[in-house]
Image (cartoon, rainbow, N blue to C red; front, side):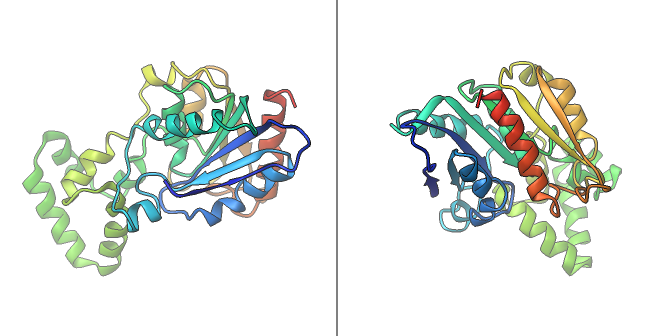
Length: 265
């Protein structure tokens, strides 16, 4: 997986290390402003990378998303603990946007991460898609009516070029050839209660006011995960909307204060 490792400017031989997990369509470079620079300023090594379905892995290698992100994170942790400049007991992780699902999912199976942040919390990725699809059409997916669902979606996408472009762009990383297969695959991107109960890593879950894509799911995730902390962000702070786009410094401040406390720094 393509990525970058930035070494902390510290006198310690081994430094705490922050894994940055991107969302569905962000670039590696965007992670510099969403945790990368802040981590280096706080004395963390920082690792950022393209995982399956993300940027270079999708466009250059045609490797799609996968729902079982532990298969991605565990090799990343393996590589980090083998480094002489990484404190294996102080590895943290931050997941933005759709990785608010991927990271907690990975934490259910990978327990060497000492503290983690989900920004925001995501329990069911498909919610943001189902919100724009008629209930009657989603019932076809639940009943396994592939031909009927694909026929209805084909008509809808033909009617609107803008909707067609959006669907094709968003669906491509899932690696499926039909709308039905895409929806069936996406329904796998759910954090089940029995998996959430396996998470032993302390987890900070951000909850921005006016969350557009997964409203209410941060609260769901925090309630499902043992030892989770819910961190609200409000419009009065200029920190509303998905991933607090106008309040990234405030996000860094709260995130790294919490991580430092959890890592005993």
